[in-house]
Image 1 (cartoon, rainbow over the protein chains, first blue to last red):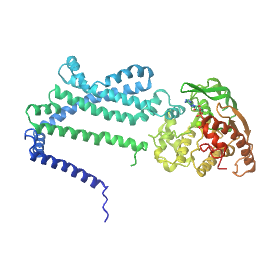
Image 2: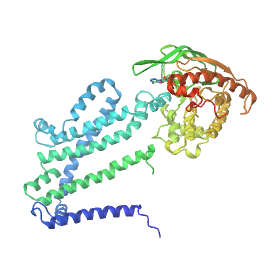
Image 3: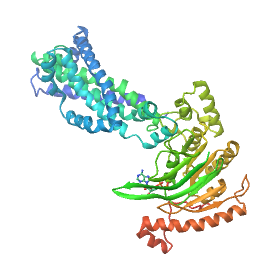
Image 4: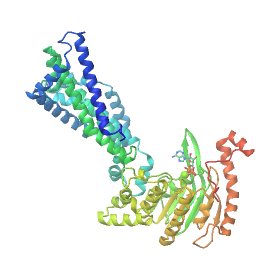
Length: 260
Length: 279
Ligand SMILES: Nc1ncnc2c1ncn2[C@@H]1O[C@H](COP(=O)(O)OP(=O)(O)OP(=O)(O)O)[C@@H](O)[C@H]1O
Ligand SMILES: [Mg+2]
């Protein structure tokens, strides 16, 4: 019998082996005792913290709170970012004015908006939403803008001759033609939103995963710090796999950029 | 529908320089005529199509369709573009339905029309495929279906079969001829293949190298259906090719400079321009 090492089964097996290898390496480093135990916990300890955190629901609650903040902020960015990007991409006047301004704003790390947000909104949810929006809005806008500008003129010309003008050209040609780029912007926006949220939570705002991370530091509880970090990584991976990865793959298949 | 061009000039800006694409173009096309436009690469054939389609406007002179100046694109004048212009995000069916959908035709009706047009170009097996799953020939068939489903009065075809192999090209030419005989549409067909032009059209306009002007007009009054090997057809082809050769050499001088010197010795022939070499 021939064994196909490229099958999904072997792919997953390879990945499992890789992570086991990492854990083993970690365990060895722990056993060598280079660093004091409280600074460098064993994989077992971290695993225990993870189990414990999920069982007494502190992790679940923190995940829930962070996700809620993220979804609100990101949702706002998504709606305004794509709209703004489409407008800038299509209207020359906006491109010259707002477009240039946004390039400048985008260079500002989103956490720099926190002091301003706190003065404006106080130490509350609005402030963190504001920071998340500021973190993700511009990258979504810029990607959408460049998506619109990079549409092959031939599609617009074809649409025009078939009677699609104005708003209908926009919804039936511009929007779908820009979709692959918009999707890239949305994905990037998500990761920026996530980073902004964590920065905000660590610095100021109570509850949420970032806060949990900070509590770990204050209690000198290294295994909590690492456990929370693992949770964050896993959430990012899940989001990538379930939402953006799937959507991107689908679009690439339809456009014929990737074989099924 | 009549198409009339009067003293049409068109130039483009390229790297700050003015490039004249079309120079003093005058012609008229009668309703139901099949016209081929032939000329060397870069002489302004696609520009001519764009002007009639209403996608570009002349610097001076006028383009009339049915005695009205062309002010923009219209569903009466559809284009089968030189490059594949099918929307990659839509299936063949949705691509063909596109124009009807925009026009507000209801779903069942536009589906029926689209399926019929797709059948006419023999693509029924691929209605649910996306453009990237089609071969070059099938893409051009789909593009043709997308245009004829709208029942335009004028069909503007910009080298639609240029990228196809000889057999597929031959087949599509015969089908187009049939389609034209059935529907009696006015067709303006751009090509730089002499054999194709003479096989298909009532009249052939020959355009000179840039700036493009109409050099000659050939009347092809051979009855249809035409045979490839018709001696009259071959005779006209020889005449046109002789005339076209001068223009192609002009282009070679314009574009290839040094290479052209070599070509005089007979080493280089212009490979990217098919001047009917498959006769
Ligand atoms: N949008 C444009 N901007 C600048 N220059 C252009 C533009 N469109 C066409 N041109 C120039 O005008 C001339 C004619 O171009 P056109 O595409 O009409 O040629 P063509 O006869 O269709 O050539 P081919 O047989 O290679 O398709 C060329 O020199 C080209 O560089
Ligand atoms: Mg052309």
